[in-house]
Length: 209
Ligand code: PRP
Ligand code: URA
Image 1 (cartoon, rainbow, N blue to C red):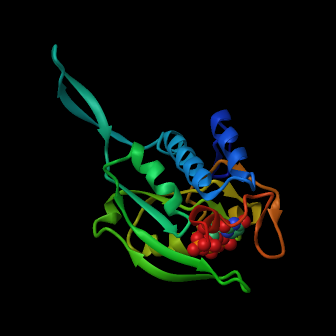
Image 2 (image 1 turned 45 degrees about the vertical axis):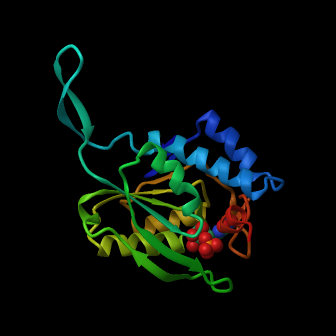
């Protein structure tokens, strides 16, 4: 399903795992395993339109021309919760470089606070996947995209699990050209900025804090 630069990957296997993930009885071990699996499954859809380049290959029978990804890949999790998706993505894109952006929300203002940045030096020439399971107010995502643009990134996708309509609007207002991939668009934010029905605090559930 796709509308205005938002792609909802509503594959039945992903939806089944997302439902298990939402369940409050899933402990951090189960939560991590499910998040890892969903992130892997999402990669197929997220990377579908990446350009390829021809590459000669010698099979056991003859020489032919195959295809490989045209550009290197950089995976950028937003700390902390984005780390929960990283291994799942790396299973399918093991050559990817990784950058890290530390951003947390101020609990009362909900404004993003950036506290750490480390990117590969050649990130500007790569395909970038910015990953974070939750897009709530959109503040953290928008701040991370701004930082990556300043680093020269021109090809980037935002990949999350659960998005709130408010977060999609905010990210699109700030960065309309950045595609958002998610497994679900939930109903709304509550007064504390949590996504409803959501899955709670992703970082706490991943790390058991
Ligand atoms: C969570 C989540 C996003 C952010 C989304 O991080 O992982 O980064 O909230 O909210 P927003 O769209 O309103 O900015 P959190 O601030 O809880 O930090 P943590 O991952 O370190 O726990
Ligand atoms: N961050 C989370 O981890 N969960 C939410 O519902 C909103 C922001």
